[in-house]
Length: 371
Image (cartoon, rainbow, N blue to C red; front, side):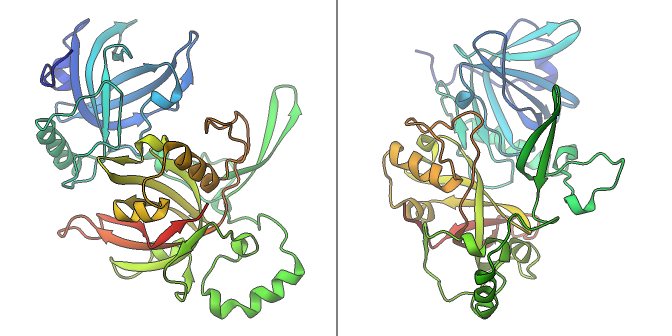
């Protein structure tokens, strides 16, 4: 069996000179693409990493695995990824590293400067070393002053789009129509152009009479709010996610009505590590989207302790509106998601005293999933 200390990290500039050799790398994620099927049986994900020794154009690492679930599920550019035993290759003048599923391993870490050194995803062959922490710390300090190209994170609202402009949008696909052979038209909505659906008249009067109780609850969600969560602060008025983002104080607590549109890590087996929950949810309402974390005792309350993987899979599927999932919890290809609107308690906090606004995060608390 391979020992725990049988590798040492190379800086990217040194790895570039190690063609056809097996190396171990750790770097900051500058770019990554979506998984895609190869011509064979594997799936491929490409990750571009940088470090202080090689910032432009970075090094491309091609990760091959037998299925999508085993590929890196990267939360954001700026996070840190560790590759052990990858092979440096060159092809038609392009230089890159290849992740071999039989011998290589990886680990993903939050790129924010903190004292948390637990990876949020690891491959099966990964073995953690205390020595790795100093490299993670060094990269976190370095990336603070390194500007990563955020082009793909620069999003516009549909109401802001002008003719002839190229833009990035986050939206919901509500309908797809084939207008010609091999030509398709997608109808999308992001909460800013029109209401997503007609609200029955009988609900409208109820909505107006309940306004004082609902506070700033997003009106679009009111008719469809589900009862799959219980909260411990029912008397607190609801606010929108935009209110949360623009609140004048760094630390505060809120009640929101949101939909969970993404979960990271994906596999329920990875929801907690050494008995500690660590999950990032992407929450959305008609005004904004934010990342909110389920951590430690808050995750334990949310899921009702530490249920089996099958139970966690079912809870995750309900939360994401995956009604078309199979018995193994895998989403049916092409099936539509319809996440339910849920109540949840949110609190904002900061990681760095010297930069409270820049290190502000959000966390779900006092909320229980009752499905």
